[in-house]
Length: 414
Image 1 (cartoon, rainbow, N blue to C red):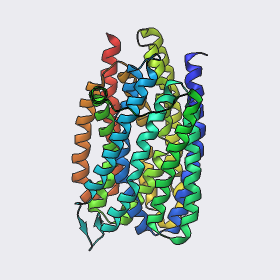
Image 2 (tube, rainbow, N blue to C red):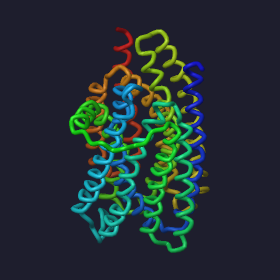
Image 3 (cartoon, rainbow, N blue to C red):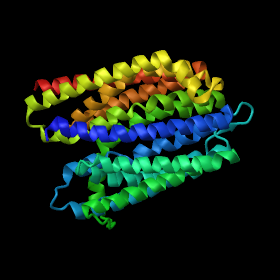
Image 4 (cartoon, rainbow, N blue to C red):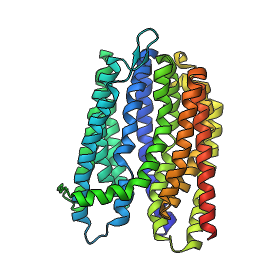
């Protein structure tokens, strides 16, 4: 099978799975936004946005480093050490998340900040960090074997579990039961994924090796920092909104962003599928450029089409999903949709640079733009609120794409 056919097959598996999980997620959003008040949904967004920052911390680029450094010959022994590293880091991050939210301030007068109820919600949701970290470990095997169909199957089953649990708890109109639905479904995701590992005769036996863990951590540092900064500037705006703006505005932005980000899995999955192909052709510049150009053209066509659709239909989409109470989400979704081409192209540029081992340059790029993003959000959100968040998100991704493209052009000319 040709390289592009292999990429297409794995991308199609993931898109089919994501189409299923996105459909389920949107259905859940419809159910939740129509059952809970705007205030409660805003509190829910605060909780899940805070916890989701730690999902990529749980990854930290370990999978990419693991795949690059592990051969078929010693795969089982390395995987056992890798598994132990994941368990330890996931436990640490879960505890760290809980401790970090405790001292955050709250203003009862206007509902801004993080109340004791929100903090308890973060505690309940924090266990998803642990299960997400372990699922990422199984994903390393699926990526190695190019079996994204199995990863996709686990995701679909977990999404269905979430839907069933949400349907069971909705009549109680209890925010904590809703959060527990996500926590239990993340455990389902982990358990199904490890069950599917039996297809490859892998039997995970955690074997902690401090030297191995240190090497993996240091080897993943540049990529990990890049991914973490990337996620922080995806999520920091919602967290800052929670500090300075009322829960209703957090809800409006949270809904718009939740709809916006459902489409962003396409470039992520595509990049995950093409990363092994980039590595295989890294010493063949002609072939590598051809694969990259075809991939970039395809992503451009898809992203521009999606951008036009969401820009024109944002009002109808919001009304269909959540009703007129969330009408203020429409202009925010319209602004965010402008950024689709930027997000699609920056993903593939980033992973090609990673193939060239330019993680350090990417780290500096993301660090600089992440810092500017944070400063801009801190300055503009208290004044302009969610509108500022939306514009800053798009502008930041434009800067990432321009910076990454300049580095890539310089590399390819050598």
